[in-house]
Image (cartoon, rainbow, N blue to C red):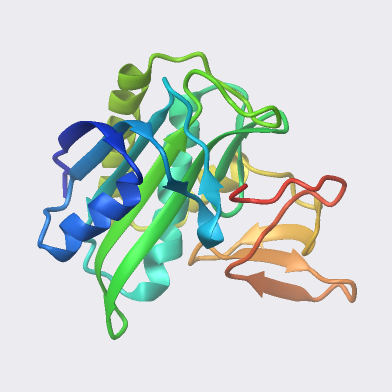
Length: 228
């Protein structure tokens, strides 16, 4: 399945995620992209604020994958891999939704869903990228915003088609290769693996495998939390 993008660029919005969710509820088609040149009330995970300075890239898009809810984590990982590929050399992935350069966050992903039982009706995927500038603890790419957007959407379309046609296995391997080395100390345990649904697998203090499906995860010697 090939994604065909329909991009709407708006000058000022409180939140692209709010607008895109409303469009999805009203029957908006898969591939609709809402981009804000200026966003005043962006959202991160767990209701946190996503600061989007002028010149940075902020957009949300609709997916209608018609899949089981347990596969949402795969889609989150897939978008993260596409985003890291677009950022290029030096980018690495921190579970569940961040792209970093060194220790500075340069991009983040937020996913909202609508379900019927265990089936996904739609997903709205929000993406924020520091293409021009970043907060003090973040990292900026010094990339042209719309050119980066177009490359990213092209990569998402390619990975989405791979996911639909061939499954998650190869995408999972790419995520692992772009993330922490096995044995890295995290606040939730020792990094071990990523499972077939995109959940994080760690070893606890008793060296037992534990599955992490949600929460703030960061390197143990830092206080950097996903979604900040």
